[in-house]
Figure: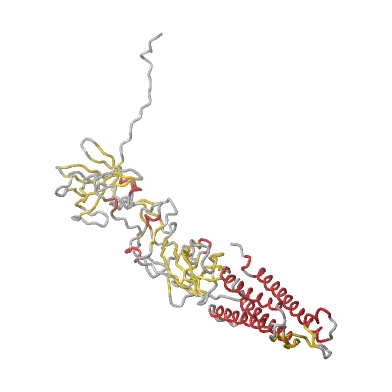
Length: 536
């Protein structure tokens, strides 16, 4: 072991905490260094990075120029107010400061709070994110004061739309969130409740203290009234309807960037964001009845398209256009309505003259289950019943005829009811073609019954019980009378009997063939060009 030589120097590293930098806010200086000061312990006061100093002179806190010695302002506490100048205080000016004249009062903040913090009036520091967040964090509740977001320049014109720096039309995005839809086929109307959000940029404005949570950037009604807003008309309605920014609308600023500037001339800490980078958005719920133009040719297996049409009315398309690439539409309701299923819902640009326009296309696929149960199946059953009369015994003409006529009467009533529930059209619908075919087929069956009955002779004889019994026979080319069964069994009784047999067989074959061909063409056409096999 050996001792360290006394002549040898030893060094060590030390950590000395830096003094807090104080900031003076509420004054206008060309050089930012004039706004920063250091705290001095003896005597207690603040010495600026520039020419300013604040000390207690003759029992009064004094702000003065340390170079020229001129007094700028003095702080005299009000009754009950602490006798220290730290925090947000009212100073009495002894010389002109910015736009304030000597002898007037000026609110000045002396704060040790660093970046990312807010100074309460009593001097307490809180996180800047707690500023204007709809709850009190300062003991004096000043963190929720002066929370207006929009800064309007002196030359701001409410009636003039913003003009982009590129001198191109201002793009306006629209977002449509459809909550409910109801379609009336008879009146061809679409009733819808939806939220319409309009978004645009206004490079004339700047915004204070934007939050990442957009709902905290909601504008007051007073500021909304001073703001330029686009006016959008709803075109395909019975009356004049247009967008409104009223007490039911919510107008917010969307924070898109983290770039901001400070404003030391404000006694409150403020982060200023540019209007060219952070858009304005206004949202309102509407209930509107839109007119549709339906083509009911394929009813009830049709696929319709109804449009919700918008047009910018604030200015022509030289100044304002829809930004379709940044716009969207969404349907939040049930996909299956009472009469329709909701297919494709899309937002696209519309072609108009002079004014920019857009439209929401709503694809409506008819749910044909109701029509199948109440039109097609009953009519098919009636047609089958009528066809079965061809297999009744030829002698019972009244039964065959009355069954077919009853089916025809019921079918005609059904056709009338269906026509009354639909809009009047100058063209045939697929359901009309179906019902008309059924009516024609039953008419053809009745005609066959009449022809067959013409070849049957009705005679009478007395049975073994002494009662008259109707005897049905068929005429032959000879002067003989035989029963139909005998004629058909022997097949030897001439031309008239053969014709009866031919008409009986022909009625069945023709009816079956026509029905088969019609159904093949009818349902095949529907399967190719309608919503019969639509996949949602």
